[in-house]
Image (cartoon, rainbow, N blue to C red):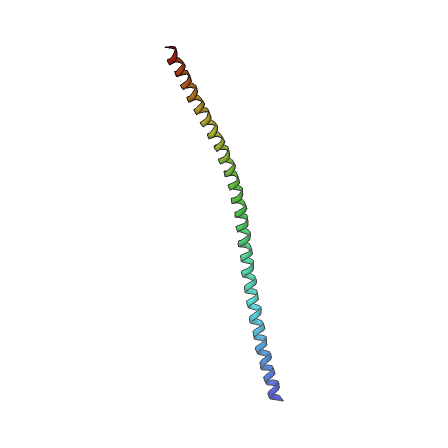
Length: 93
């Protein structure tokens, strides 16, 4: 009987050690999880900022694209007007 009690006491001690090591492991995992969640939050904030910047750059590039096409149209129109006036002057002579 004393041997059985001693064995059970040994098992209890072993189980207590395992429970304690499991608690430590859980605490470590919780710490790692919190760090990962903080990193994810930082990355989400950076992603939001980058998306905002990208939207601004796209808007600016569209604006400049429209300006370039307008200037190109004006340039071609000016060239055609110049060519027309040169043709008219050549025909008058």
